Each structure stands twice: as structure tokens, then as C-alpha cells.
Image 1 (cartoon, protein in one colour):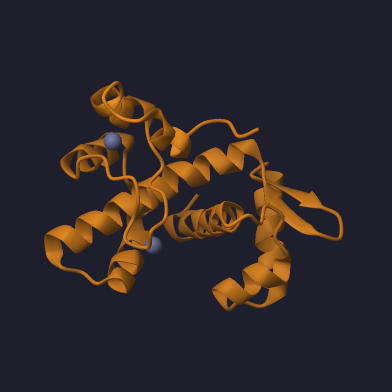
Image 2 (cartoon, rainbow, N blue to C red):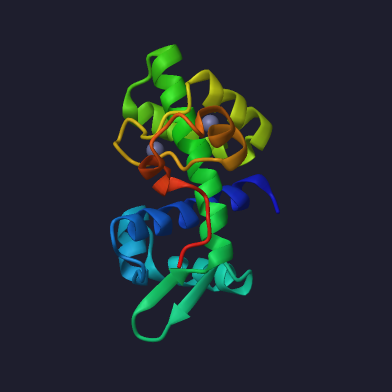
Length: 162
Ligand SMILES: [Zn+2]
Ligand SMILES: [Zn+2]
């Protein structure tokens, strides 16, 4: 998979997870098209690819929803995205839009190892500058903060949704 194509797949997965976090788990092609300012047929084509990879599932007449597989990937990439945003703002004085754009260009390329290092460096933040959840990583975040912190804060963990 080439880099640009890869990025586009993650852009879709991230947007779908954002919709889901806002309480909308089934999303219409048109809503995604509007979000990306793309023609609906372009979006339909991409969604077909995502469905072939079993990242999304078509719900007839209603739209698409993330599969468990797609959701787990989206959470991993969004975690990296938000850690990078915080890092860029804090270290280099980026504004939120710049940080978001910059993070989007390489969040999906960041290794787990580096993401965890940035997470530790930032002291395991729970929300990004947009107020959205920074999904927790079992290995990184709980190992360090586990016992001492309130369990109620763990609701953003990367886990299988029911
Ligand atoms: Zn962003
Ligand atoms: Zn962490």
C-alpha cells in the first residue's frame, strides 16, 4: 500500500470513529463526502475498499459502520494523532489547526514504541486540545498510572466495544 493511499484509509477510519464517539455509529456516504469535501462517488468507492478489507460494514439504506477490526485500527491511529497534536502544540507552539494538519500527515506512520515514548513524555494525557479522548494504551498508560488513578478514567482504553 503506498503512503498516500494508506493515509486516505486512515483518514476515513478516523472520521468514522469520530462520528461514533459523537454517538453516530452508522454514517451516510453523504456525511463523509461533506466532511472531506469530496464527491459522494469517490467516497462510495473508498468505502467499498474499506469494506473489502473488513474495516467497515454496510448497513443497507443507512450507511456504514466500523467493524471491530476497523475500530481498533482507528483507535490506534487517533491515539497517535492526538499525542502528536499535543506534542506539537506544547513543544513547537503550533496552533490547533496546524498541529492537526501536521499530525495527519504522519500519525499512521508512527511506531507504537515512539507513540508510547511521546505519551510518557507528555505524562499520559487523557484529552487532546480539541477535548477529545486520547485512547489509553494498556502497556504504556496503565503500567505507569494504573493503581494510583481512578478507574473511572479508564473508559477510553483500547478495548473491544460491546
Ligand atoms: Zn486533529
Ligand atoms: Zn501512556
